[in-house]
Image 1 (cartoon, rainbow, N blue to C red):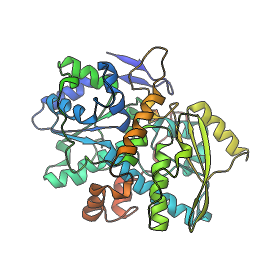
Image 2: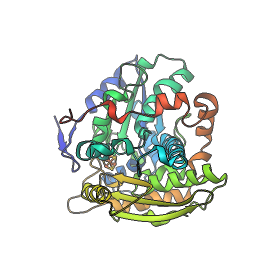
Image 3: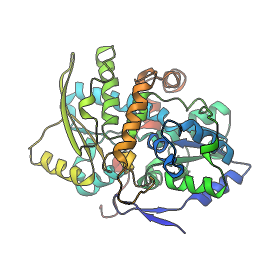
Length: 386
Ligand code: SF4
């Protein structure tokens, strides 16, 4: 069995490709796969392709050829995470006295484990919004299963992630929302999916492009930047600004928090609400320093994004490894460029997200949204926790 060590937190990558081959061969299973934002700018490194040629849509063709019934985009639920987390932030910000500050993003399981293990008193500061991966799993087995009229137990959800920590996130007892099965059945890293392509002699480099399936397949520019440090914060601020003021900001208004520097901070003014102090941190040594400084009162923020991997998911532990070369910045720049060229750059303008709320969830933070899309970070314990 292939086991690769993750550079974050000493987690191990167990090879789960066999489980996916078994599901693809099972006629009773409906196989659904999602692809994370950061995967699309890394898979092509194995084939020495330019990022412009190596599109996500070429991966879609390859995944269909492998036998997946539906190929969806985690960008869809990245937009949904922004809707839920942005609404949560606005709610907290307008009822400041009810909460402890700052609010932390919660979409990086490496960071969530670090906080719960090292600074457990701050667990309530985490946003309750699930990560895009987990929102996707819950929706695939509820909304999507209902749409195609099948028992959720027949749906087998596979994630392709830049991350080894996502495997343990999917296995948490709190991530079985729809039935007693996990919402996400198997998580593959970028390295594992490329191994599967090679084993099946599928070469995405020679393929035409195919669009993602619908209804979980549309993402905006605000979603794709989830893969780069600062992207979640940038996307959340774009929609939080809209939620508070009723109009869109310049999509580049929050660019001060972009880039791979390990600790960035800025203050932005939101009309009607006032000044908002934010920080964006990546890498666990920076996260430790951040928490120490917060505890000792040296820094004060309203909203903080933390990613365990330096540079964010673009440099994640499940991505291709090039000895001696760090690729997070180059991959992140490709993601920021995709955002810049996207026709829609605000999560709240994603038409499939608008349909999802109209048809199924009703509104951000509704009862159904809470059930499917939010989690209780106290609902599971770290190994050393009493
Ligand atoms: Fe995973 Fe690293 Fe991204 Fe966190 S920053 S979600 S550990 S790849």
